[in-house]
Image (cartoon, rainbow, N blue to C red; front, side):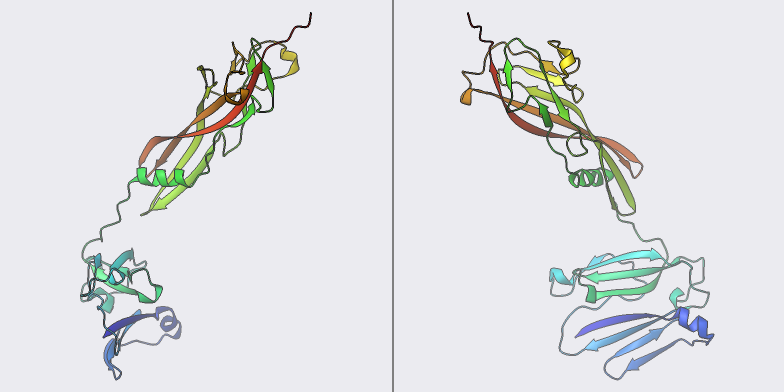
Length: 290
């Protein structure tokens, strides 16, 4: 037989009407009972023909439990919130105790995450209930996982461009929150909030001819006024043509390292993520007509 409890919060209405409320417990003719305190009424109803567990008694310290059948859907999970303000002295919510002796909490218990199987009631506890322990580093990773972090948005070298042996190549990337940063996100649980900020700290260019270039910034866009000068921040000079490479182009890979700094819950740390972008670069040589 399934026992359901329905909590009726009546304090506001009764206060408005200024009607004194006497505590009582009365059996329900259909099978069940009602228990009323100064601020709440708890109604227990027996539903015929349905088997199931019964909620723990008053004063329970909560936690998890299960019915006799062991069905995961019967697992009970309870959370607590300190009642603010605390009930007046003499309220049944104190369960015979006086204000200052422990405290009264709002207890919310659910079974299997089903909203209809949630019970909310007031309980007295001698000591504060244990709080959920959350590792801030776990929340930091959760915040990172919620971000969109992409590989470099390569502006140069262009896949459709043609480059020349011995001529300086300028390399740079377009900057946005998802391709370069900064990018931020937060994650919360158990009263803790962790905020993470991600930004690309370096880009390693594998040039396809066996060489690599590490750039700690986005690079400098080329302008015609630079002429044949080398890039002041990120560049390369090919010493051979790409004709012998597959498809006649060098496979260039730009790998960005995202450095993520996070803090929250009294802690701080750093995480890294790696993303890649691939382009094909055609490198030829100057043809001299005699």
